[in-house]
Length: 260
Image 1 (cartoon, rainbow, N blue to C red):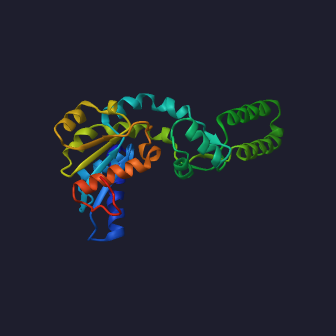
Image 2 (tube, rainbow, N blue to C red):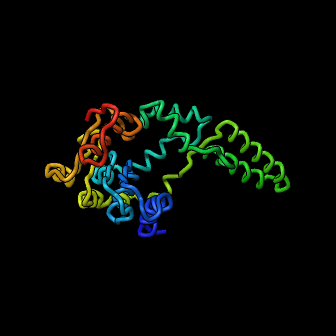
Image 3 (cartoon, rainbow, N blue to C red):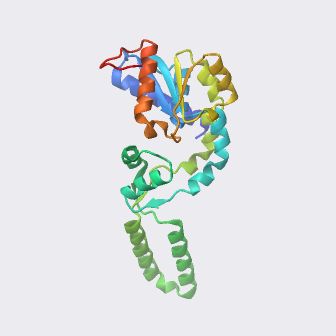
């Protein structure tokens, strides 16, 4: 599948979900997306796939920074554990590695990022098993049954020790990465609706967004002391920023004494 077929299909999914939920009369909707999800939100808005769209929010995704980061993405993915002994182990890793800085949030989000292994072994285990089969075949072809039995036992032992692995093999999506982010900044700026950009640091801005921000083409808010997963590290601050944006543009009315 090429990029031209893959990425628009994700955007159409958004439109289809809205249509399935609300039919021909959807309520006013604001699209909010983080990282690649932010790119999907922008492309969805630009393609007019949500007719009742009134606002757009990208969370910590900037074309320039994203394109620069793609060169080291494979190294980052290779540096992650391939398996986890338990869900709690996966949650612990996500916090200790800095991927998520909020333990409460990690307990929610990591559950969806991993799955129970199904016949998966670690690369080291697979290599030793293959080498064992080769050596056994060279010594005695009649011993194949015992080798297969040993392989199954090794597989079961590996799954018993590390029963969880990543749900999505992100490394296999590399050929799409460039298309997800190239041209994103100008596309974001061209969307004719109120826009909000939430960042973990102002240093993430690229040239196009810097100029656009100076021209008042979108609202920007920097939430310091957050990692890339801004909405997970500081969910209350992100909610407050979005609520303030909605009230400022008269998309919503404040209740319960909310101060914006």
